[in-house]
Image 1 (tube, rainbow, N blue to C red):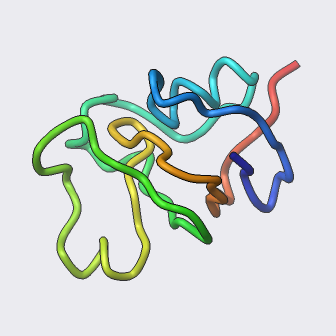
Image 2 (cartoon, helix red, strand yellow; image 1 turned 120 degrees about the vertical axis):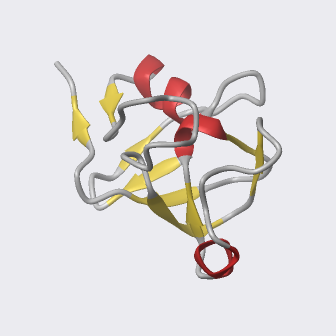
Length: 91
């Protein structure tokens, strides 16, 4: 998994959400509720695909079609690049 424009690259196993995988890699993504409702973590998929850990994440059909995702309830199903302008690398 890669986070742009930060350029951070790390593994995102299917046992972790994208948000959890980022945290293990010391990458901080915007977040709040961690259950798909607040939309604080909303970001865009540049390439790759995900599956969701809940039946209907807080995304409209149009947002899904435009490539948006909620990393708190998404799991990578392929190599993945996300556009997350507010991501930061933690020390």
